[in-house]
Length: 228
Image (cartoon, rainbow, N blue to C red; front, side):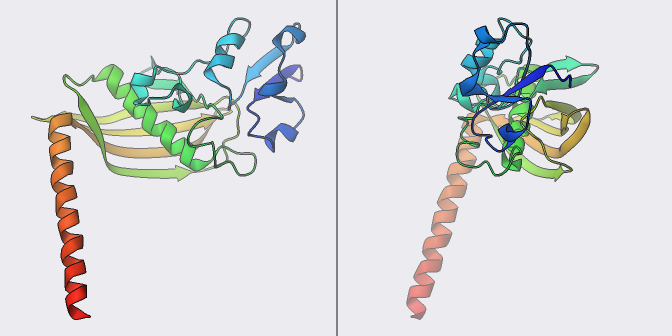
């Protein structure tokens, strides 16, 4: 990164902002920067990114419906695009995000935020490439994660690679691998198996499981009381 570049980062990353060449989002005054080259780090709101986009090349958050989030501040990726056969999106973290709001330790992006960003990525890619024909639920069957190094509040890329896809009578099954990379190196990897099932069927299965769980707990409580 050139010496003349300034990296703007959300105020919640206060420890990272102690590094030279950074500026807090709250202190940024675009009209005072002149010809200064600006790099958008993490922690910036969608509103600020939209303002910066008038002068600089910065990412934008994906549409809420792609990531299954109600609040725009909770979207953590840009809109995925297909690049050389691999789905790619920028990491776009708003410091007001529900995951970051009460969990930033040190200078790095917490692992729990990266897991949620990966979930949003596989959800968004599925919605774009394999859109369900009816209202559906996404169900995780298996998720393995590995974290190789810190991810700092700097430009970051999320990639999705489809391993297997199967169409069934009530939905679809997927196996995918995802990576989160920064500065050209992979920092975190995920291997996920998930299903996309019709909402009505998913709701029925969940309701049955909830009733059975409640019955089991009540039965256990009754047995414990009878022994006392």
